[in-house]
Image (cartoon, rainbow, N blue to C red; front, side):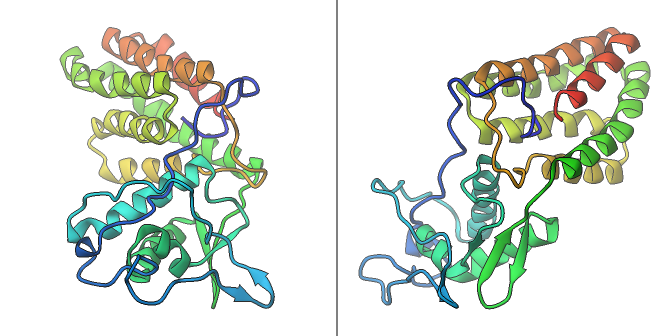
Length: 274
């Protein structure tokens, strides 16, 4: 599901992606003391640069419970939490966020947060602002349309070829992935939905045997889910469910090797995302 898909105004809007975890336990962060944790050294404060307050230092009245993670997975879990916050609109386009301040909210050192933000910068989701932190990229509607056009040019012909060549039995393995998008849509869980959506499309393209295609398409798909400069678009739960229903319908058409329906569904799926 590309985040800009809109068939109407949210009423009611589904909840935003899960908030950034308030704290991780110290023993889970490579032995480094958690900045801003109780009894744990210097309190991290929001940075002031040229009189401008850096975003991200606020806390929630009811902090989330610590996430149980292994030491080696701290950076990865922070990266996934930041991606969810980006898609859900908690990290707002154009705003600057300080790694130390975000680290205080995680209850970890700034190092894994910086590493995760550098990865997001490599992906184009944020920009490095020297001596301040990271600014969330501001995407235009035109950029989103271009991404969707490229995805369509790549995926439509591949799916049509797969519809002609892949045995029906192989498509059965993808049924749980299609159903996962339906389940997430029914819950209104955008973070789970975008992950399930990319997993479903990625699994289809994997059957092509072209790993470069899979990686390029996944990058385009992820970028198409970032919020626009105008802020996150609120999608009605009914629209999210309709989006997921197109996945199951597409899978049925692929099993039946109905090329006309496959082409129609895929093009409609991409057109509806703009």
